[in-house]
Structures are given as structure tokens and as C-alpha cells.
Image 1 (cartoon, protein in one colour):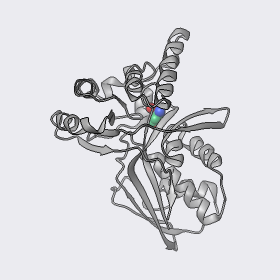
Image 2 (cartoon, helix red, strand yellow):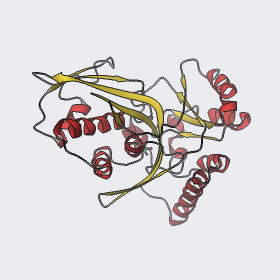
Image 3 (tube, protein in one colour):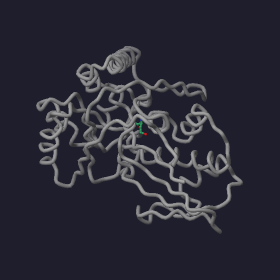
Length: 287
Ligand code: HSE
């Protein structure tokens, strides 16, 4: 059995903690069979456990404590702590692992609630589970989610060669916004989502870049953001935003503009990885 989970890009600017898209970059977990102890082979370095301490196994055991140990192989293209939902992909894979091996028969919404409780917010786990563009809320322990069609475009991921822990990136956010600011911020988010559902990526991109929930507080953690935004604006990108908690910056681009934008972005910093991705509509799958 192989579990395949997408990378995800959360926030889309003002959709902070609520909106996310699934992308064509993947975590693959191969279940190789029962074993004496839990064993997770991977090439991600020593900081990622290869035993029952691995987040994948911990998640599965949370749901099914009696699960027999298995040998697993984990392979991922998703950068660790990069802002593309690496930990969410592992949590979602862990839920699927328990669901399949223990026959839990979880519904999609049950998976969403479990994943959101573990992750703390639904914006990465929801698109990882459902695919596409998902708008979700997590209120009073309940997750409500709506999957919307995301118009065709390229998603250029500008991935700095450093990790940024979500904890650090959330640590710079304020505890409260004034009533007036909250109204402005949510109106920007509402128009962004409405524009996406109208397939109007030009307007959506404009609203994405008007976020006042989080990017202005995080700018110093992601020094390239203003330059990337300028390049995207000058060369015809729809809009760009801090992907999740960063440091990846995502540029939504019309396919015919992608090459020129990526070439220019590549000149900003030779240590940056640039991946051209698409939105993945399928969600988590098992082979
Ligand atoms: N919405 C979250 C954030 C995503 O921006 O902090 C990262 O987990």
C-alpha cells in the first residue's frame, strides 16, 4: 500500500488560518509490512525519527493505539519547515495509515477534525485531505469546510534554503486586532474568496496582496518578499503571498508568464529553490 499526500500552501494572504490549496508535490508513504518494531526509513536526516517517535507513527497510534508495528518507507519532495505543509502531509498520512490498517472507516469530516486538532488550524490539512482550494473554519471543536474550484494557473514556489518553524513565525503575530482592522481584514478575505469562486484570479491576486492579518508582522523573517512581489507585479503574475508560515513565497501566475517570472526570481538568490507547481484537485489517495 502507498499513501500519497500533497504539499499545501496555506493562507493565500488574507485567508489566514482558513484557506489553502493542494499542490503537485508529494509525500509518499509505502507500507512494507508488519515488523518487530516500528521502522520508518527516509533520507531526511537525523532530526527526523525513524521509529515510533516519527510524527507519522505517533499520529497513527493516537487513532489506533493497538496498531501492530510496521515497516514504512517515507519519501517526500516537500521541504521540511518550508511553508508547504510538510508536517500536515505527515499527519494526514498517519491518519490514513491508521484508517486503512485498523479499518476505522473514518469519514472525510472526521479525518478533517482529527487532523485539525493535531495541527491547530485547518488551512493545510483540509486541502491535503480534500485536494483543490479549501476554505475552512475551526470553531468550538468543529471543522466546516468548502472545496472550491481553483482557476487554472501556475503556482511558482520560491523556497529559501532555510527552515522557519511555524512556532517562531506565529510568535511575531499580535494577540488582537482592533474592531475596525478586523472588519477591513475580513472584507479583503471575503472578496479574495469570492473572486476565486468567480474564476477571477486577477482580482483574487490583488486582494491576496492586501492582507493585513499576518504578512506585515512576518516580513522581517522573509526578507525576499517585497522583491518577489515587485517581480510578480512587473511581469504579470496574479499575486504573491507568504505560503503558510513561510519562508516559501508562492506566486500565482498565468502559465504564459511563468518562465519569465521564474528566470527573474532565479537571479534574486542562487541558494533559493524554485519549483513550478499546479493545484492538485484530487486530495489524499491510496494505491
Ligand atoms: N496559517 C498558518 C500560519 C499556516 O500562517 O501560521 C502554518 O501552519
